[in-house]
Amino acid sequence: MTIGMLLFPCHNLKDPSKMTKEHNIILYGYTYSPFVQRIQYYLTLRGIPFKLCLQPPILPRPDVELLGLKHRRIPILAIGRDIYFDTRLMLQKLEELFPPGFTLGQTHMDGDNKNNSKKHDNKALEELLEEWTVTRVFPQASFLIPTILTQDPKFIKDREEYSGRSWQTEDIERLRPEAVVFIRGCLEFLEKTLLGDGREWILGTEHLGLVDLKSMFLSSISLSLYLFIYESTQFILLRLFLREYGQTYCTFDSVALMHPGP
Ligand SMILES: N[C@@H](CCC(=O)N[C@@H](CS)C(=O)NCC(=O)O)C(=O)O
Image (cartoon, rainbow, N blue to C red; front, side, top):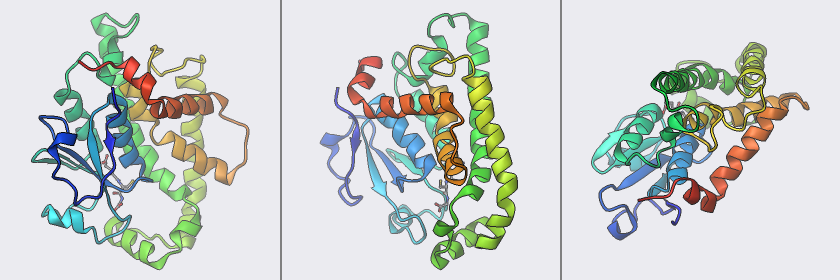
């Protein structure tokens, strides 16, 4: 199986021979966005062909304007003629579109987890972790961004216009201590509770699953931002987890083996 990521400039979107027969999938975003990475990882791990249409981190985004959209956030995912604006919905739709048997969500049923109530618990945990990550961890992690990145006046103006809050260095630095405490608490939860018994993947499964991808995509960024502030030897289990996660994403052959296509 070949891996699906095709990195072309946006304007080269016309070659259908390089896409899946039924779906023409285009991911719009910039690669250091954790949300873009989330979908990019997913598509890559699933071996689903897609094109990445690189966007600038600040407006204007002419390719998005060409779609006739005013939507501000990144990523945007086009599947054929349908457009999706939120990564939670994108993952849900992609899981539906691509046949069961090798979905990442299949890990709900791995190993001992075949009975229905366990499956239900696992699904509930997956969704809770996803909401926590997207709505709680992400906004706080943004206060840990090194201020060197927030000193570009164009970037500050752009972010202030869309978020309605101050991105001035002094304001970010004022709010940072509270965010650091929150993020440290999140990292400790991952380290001591979720991965606390030394398991490899969150549900104790043999392979990486959707729950791992949904809840961990921001942790690597939160951890690196945290370690940028505090050099520390903490969070060994989490580091091991993230290393394994990164290797799985990079080792395309093993991914193909894990999730053989039809
Ligand atoms: N809930 C959204 C969040 C997406 C989001 O906040 N993306 C950030 C980038 S990491 C963004 O759009 N920031 C403003 C921008 O880049 O213009 C999702 O899951 O897709």
